Length: 250
Image 1: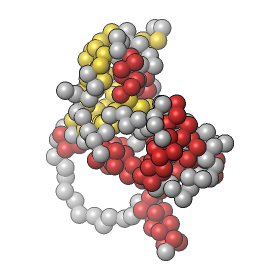
Image 2 (image 1 turned 30 degrees about the vertical axis):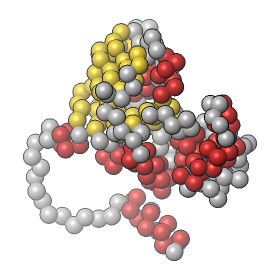
Image 3 (image 1 turned 60 degrees about the vertical axis):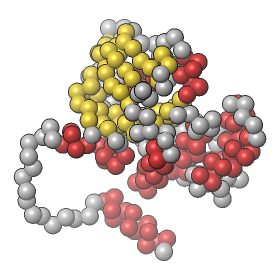
């Protein structure tokens, strides 16, 4: 059974048709990247999958539950991390986690918080207010909060928007660890390198339709054969940036 299955999904806002017959399937325990420019319909699709919007037409299931008729079951099986962190800056990292664990009525919220702080390498920062965290730490805390209750499916809607290169790499590592642990991740992004680093499968959403869907290797085969040229590879700005940071930390 697919973790996520979407067939013939349509959604309009007034006269604007945002999703125009979307079809996709996501296998359990994989990272599925949904690429598209601003306005392509990525966030609308995620909001429908998360039961925050109702589709106009089509069939959508998440872990076998119908998003239209079994919304409570879907919400119990998912977590959504949006483009902006849902962290409360006035609370410490640990207090943020304990709060969510209590809202989910989990036994021993403190133990849940401590385990997630350890898992996301935030134990030393757990007693500090979240307002003092770096961008990468805040995003890791945000993702940790979304994992409370061990949902089998997590939606990450442009999770690295506004982050610096080092923070982006921290989030990438977190996403890889989620998939390695069996969590299904649907990731929306505008960054091609993000999809290339993380995704098992990639779909391109353009003007409300999926225009390509496959592994990175399959998508590359859609292009003409590459012309082989020998050039000296220069380091990218990101390579230089990270190397300088590593030197300073040494």
